[in-house]
Amino acid sequence: MPAITATIITFNEEDRIAEAIASLPCCDEVIVVDAGSTDRTREIAYKRGARVIEHPWEGYSKQKNYAAELARNDWILSIDADERLSIELADEIVSWKFSQRERAFSMPRRVFYLGRWINHSGWYPDRKIRLYDRRFCRWEGDFVHEWLKVDGGVGLFKGDLLHFPYRDWNDHVTRIGRYTDLAARAARSSGLRGSIVKLLLAPPLTFVKSFFLHGGFLDGWRGLAIAYMGARYVFQKEFRILR
Image (cartoon, rainbow, N blue to C red):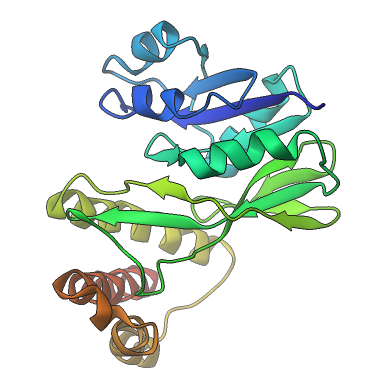
């Protein structure tokens, strides 16, 4: 029966790290790699039983690979501080320990946004590969939007990974600013050049895709907000690539 190490990378997550750790009873070890928080993140994580290591920020993929290298076990469950395992997913992982075959597993991620769970808008099921054997998998990608490269098959869990990405509307706006800056830097570093046509056409197409094609209208006014924010993200990213 394989043991599992949960890894969480953090920076100023004192209001969320305790709940993230509390949702991991199916794991045998919890490692928090903190990038120099100025709040009580490390203290709270330590009191919750995590092994806490401070490590300078190197980017999402490098930070997650570093955390995996520190683990006592080969099987890694990587979550963010704003995520929680649902009871169903935690139970499913415990059952998997007795019958594991694949080298990685994906799980549907359900987002809680502005007071409600989102079921459409392209935000669900939004499967993420988070449980993996580090001997056959590695995080890749620069700046932002990291992904897990898997050498082998990927199994499917049914239980939800619960996601609480934004504290409020202003937090969403702020994060869009930060992530579009990172995405633009990644694009420019790879030699991608900006396009006026893409700047003008991509945002409305993103809105239509989210609100209509992905059923965002079924999420009510929150679906409208999600579609707008998606279009805003694309516009800001393309504008910053052009600069």
